[in-house]
Length: 351
Figure 1 (cartoon, rainbow, N blue to C red):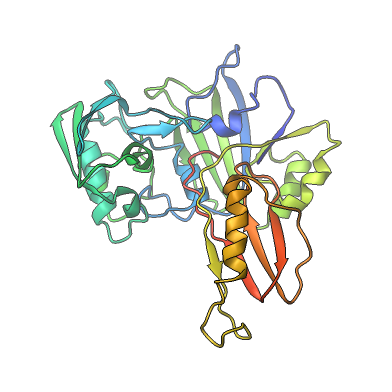
Figure 2: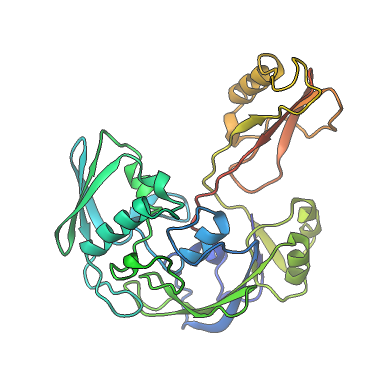
């Protein structure tokens, strides 16, 4: 869920989602004000291939593009590839966008995609290698044509290529990229403050973005960040502390906008001491299995499965996370002392 301050009609409600995409026209001239966006957490790196983490993705997606991207509604659409076609079960051909340049001025070509692929899968520090599993080769047929080969049928290939940021071939040789040089709508102006980044729009292949200047501010304390938002220091808050959602109901100055996300929910079972079955043994056959079954039948992970109840010493709590960033829900079933929790992965490119 994102929070937006009602300042002016020149800032569209979907701006928080659209910063990493071509910004929507407001019907007026470009907005010269600085937009301030708050993040709970800090980017772990400015290298687009080294970390697979939500805040890092959100920040770097303003500097870099992939061959394809997700829209604000999480639909696949062209980015650096204008179109593509599947030649057979294991070969895809991509036709690349013309007249694209990196921020420093280098022309974009298929060679840059190949270099980015080789770096992302072979760099020991790569955090996105798993997105490329099954991709065996990328070949530059010519400057604007690329063939991707897989080791078998790959129905999720396009989705996974969203998470391959394309860097210039010269940057692919670097051990670590510390200065973003991408084809995205923004360039980095200042990053001397560890708690903020200053971005400025530039006229890349999308044209000049409507919002020219953006400041990202980072904090580890989400509640302190929320207070700064309420005080007017921040215009857009990436995520709202769940226990503060009630503070927004009567506000005329802010709006809470649920947004779709990509997430993987997994259940892990605690094997802490004191559990039935002895040390190191997990009693999964009873409570957990029935809990998972009930959750699946009653709507899957995309729907709440009950009202939150107080946890007791002898309970099993199954957690579910909604598709929008709303409150979490759980169903507590008295049975055995088993703890279940979600480990979430957010391969997201929106703020």
